[in-house]
Image 1: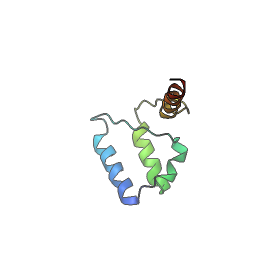
Image 2: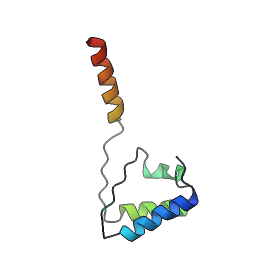
Image 3: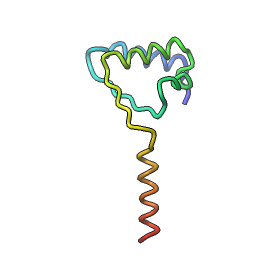
Image 4: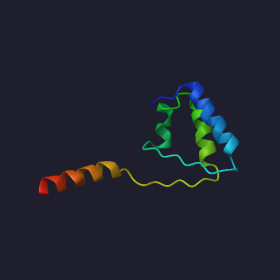
Length: 81
């Protein structure tokens, strides 16, 4: 989903104000290199990634979708029962 420039600027402002004060958790199924699809201004995208990753913990869970696996498992249970 593309975020317009104003929305990206507001998000950057929130991240800047929370920096080193409170935690922020972001979940994405896109790698940082793909964030330019959402934040179309490359400089603003880089600034947002910079704010999020500075002194942060990045947790990669892999490429498998939990929701998809759960839905498939439920479908298999419904077929069996």
